[in-house]
Length: 273
Ligand SMILES: [Zn+2]
View 1 (cartoon, rainbow, N blue to C red):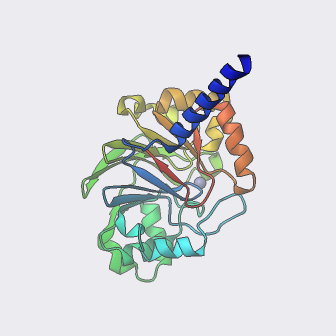
View 2 (cartoon, helix red, strand yellow):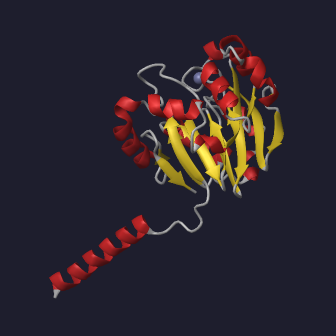
């Protein structure tokens, strides 16, 4: 009798697990495709936003798009032909490559780049055909704690002025992005300094963010986790910027430190929201 009920319990647990894994995602209308480090293609209904996706190999601590993926992004092959907005949080090369951004814009006339004057200057300096893509750029360089909203092809993007982490990068303009697509609100913020003051001015809990892409180090300390909960207050958190060499171990660690967090660790990994 005992083993009988144990068996029933076991099959129940198994059935639940299978259900959870294969449940059709009826509400999952926004997709995120991971392209390395903090790079994601967020898409819905044939339109997409590419955040910090156009970057190249930089250093061993940063996952980068392999040649076939990089080439698909630069030449705007599917699914990157859906891109309407290209966002670059800041000019560090683990988030951005000026020539890759230029090439994507040239090969995808429907795409618009929204970023700071620093990003635009790097594209102008390093991409030979920059004149031909100039009309596809919207420069916005917020002061710290300033923001501005853009509406591109039905996609709303609010750009936030957030300080980059570490004093030695004081000169690097770092942007946060609130992206509204497919009825969902997503948030990504480059390498923003992990301080309450950096986020508080934007009153992000009022934004009712659905998905926040968060550099993994935010989850490693009590202060970081508190900041995430109180200053971002998203429904779903996705850890990014995880060093590839220890990614699997780190993802496991993160799920213990912050139950429910999802981790992006593998090139072309997909999430649905
Ligand atoms: Zn950086």
